[in-house]
Length: 79
Image 1 (cartoon, one colour):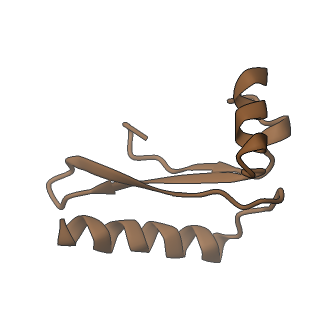
Image 2 (tube, helix red, strand yellow; image 1 turned 180 degrees about the horizontal axis):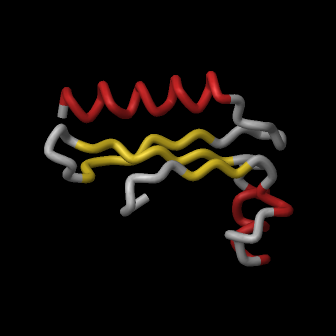
Image 3 (tube, rainbow, N blue to C red; image 1 turned 90 degrees about the horizontal axis):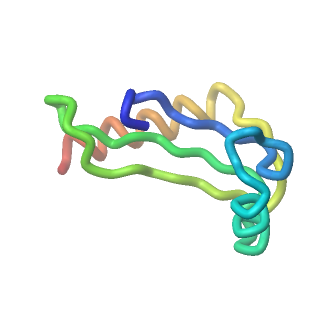
């Protein structure tokens, strides 16, 4: 997220970015997939993160990725 890149996890249980303990915490919380998108002010300052946590594994289609990234851009302009 610090680099500005969004993170898209289709299946928490099989993702290499999660430790076994983190997988269990996410699944216990009902998050089987995750997306994180940085919210930045127009000058680039990171001010927030928008995240989505569906309760079932899912692909993140391009249209969904674009919508969440657009939401983050608009939000950054308003902050």
